[in-house]
Length: 68
Image 1 (cartoon, rainbow, N blue to C red):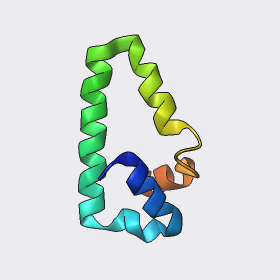
Image 2 (image 1 turned 90 degrees about the horizontal axis):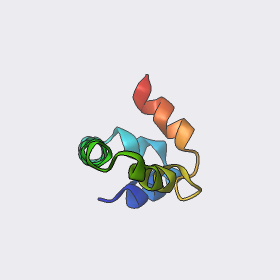
Image 3 (image 1 turned 30 degrees about the vertical axis):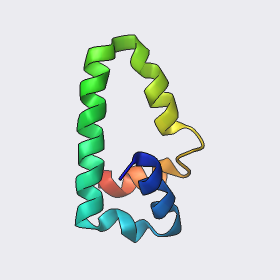
């Protein structure tokens, strides 16, 4: 699953984020992004902007769910 697909599904129900397969996908995306950030350095800002823009509505709510 892509980040956009996960965020779109989570917009319908936050319970979607509690599913094991979804959590695995998110972990994989985060690991990939961490490697990209390390390799790209400052250029990685464009990827972060994509993750945090309006394409990911209510991201703070979703982030809070995982950070508790």
